[in-house]
Length: 196
Image 1 (cartoon, rainbow, N blue to C red):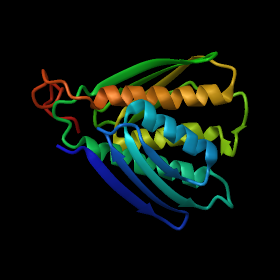
Image 2: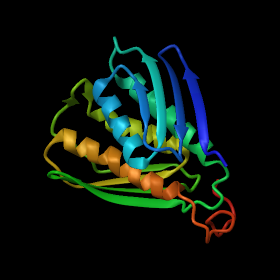
Image 3: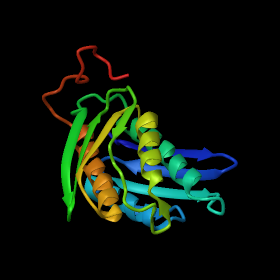
């Protein structure tokens, strides 16, 4: 069964399209107008073995906020749609990922209940043309649109680029684990019989 979704969202602030294949090979076609954000999404696709196409036309003349947050909303919806009825998936995923001096833990539960927790702090206010405060806004939007629990704990890190990149890559690895199929699972992995 193909686990792929295309989601579009058009507002007065942004026009965004995301195509996600959970069973891809890690290829990405990205055009958000924000170089560092494209770099992070490329790492997410590559390390999660997701095929990802993102096209975002946002009001960057204002700032990067709407483009990044709205991309998170659309990506979250694509994750939810591609995961389908969640039958046979592991549901949970986690990764502790080092990147130079940075060490980040990411844990995911595709529970159908949104929640976001993070202790991430960044030494700098910007990385390239992306405001570091947008990391929280992006992952918050993903977690709520995908209806997942998403937790980050940053154990070490003094370089904003390394911390952020470790977060995106750890999320990729954790999500890849959570959506992977386990043949031992009959139906969905829940005592309630439903992941909604």
